[in-house]
Length: 214
Ligand SMILES: [Zn+2]
Image (cartoon, rainbow, N blue to C red):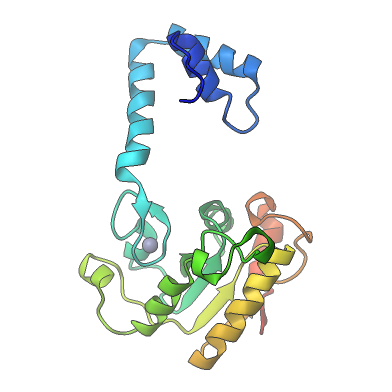
């Protein structure tokens, strides 16, 4: 910690104030709340935080965050292994899951192309995507670990409707076209510049079902 805070309550408040949307006052209130809660609560909270560091990793197949290898989505035999939805982030994946309209699998890029910020293709999980597509049909490490087999036929590019998201979709469509798969892009209707994560479920479900071929 850069700030040398020795008082445990102040220390916790400083750490909490780094969370998005949490100001100094709220952080202090939360710290006192935790202090006044039953002891088990603070213990469980600290264990949950430690578990983030120790247990959460990227699924070797889809790059989703998971405590299990492969992740529950890759493991689920009821998911349609022909459909692969490519998203920027795990919260985007969760937003599409909430619509309950999509029963295929995912691939998480962990970002979008942004040359101005120095984010090129090598910074995204594109290598992993290509490896996954080339392993298609063959048994891989993740199959051995219990992932359900897949035979991908369509790739749905569900990056955000932002400049970076569109550039990423265009880049991927050109990269993947030679593989002879159906490549689609989620429909417009999502507000330009928006984030999938915050789209309402009806709009997002409509964007998924109205996807167009690239
Ligand atoms: Zn997975």
